Length: 326
Image 1 (tube, one colour):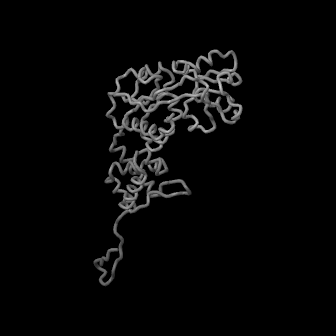
Image 2: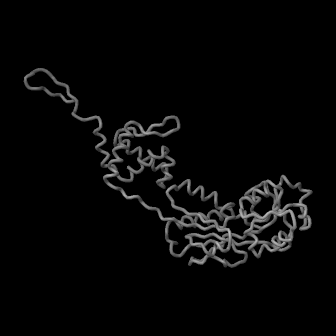
């Protein structure tokens, strides 16, 4: 309050409030840093601090701290919860409108993220890498990632990517990608065995020899027909006059094994990935194996996002190394 004694009224005191309008605090909006303004606007748009942090590629604790400091500076509560839903308070709506106007005036540039191309053997993408890629996207919603599934040697030879993860039948990384990469890194050796669903095969009735397979339907992923190292299995499938299903879809082949009493060739790690399946060792004397190789494009190997994807793959295989031990 101000104490003013007006002329002509000696001995009296006039109580008058300062001449501030209710929305004077909005004038401070022009001084809000661009990144803090973005934190507020993205949080308002997402209606969720966690989702906003993902979109901004920062930790949620950092976001909440910045917004708390903004509220303290403005001396206004900008957000409120209605049940579990995050909404803007009346003052938050006013600030949102003000920052929207300022954003148009400033024409703040949008930071473009580099587009990263990841090419992965389809079976590895489905069984091993998919879950960790989902976790990566949950943490970083601003990334631009194109995932290319490699379902044949031709696809591998024709693809152009920043990071490539592929399989070979021998100890060499060849045949590999045709673009120039750094030194390929071998991540694992995979052994392959026929598998069947446990519920369709009692222990005493499981096949002990190739001849015993005559009583079971076989299912084959068509990609495996191209693999020389799978010749024992491929020859068996080709000799079948009945009781065989050939599929283009790896995921559908898995469903057929799980749900249709079929036997199919799968990596030995599959019993760890899906405990409803059981391997059938000893049916073939000749081992069937693949090597897993990782390489990074020479032209983009220094890009931070490319390094992040490559390291995620290395970590995934390192964490699952027990899956690949024979």
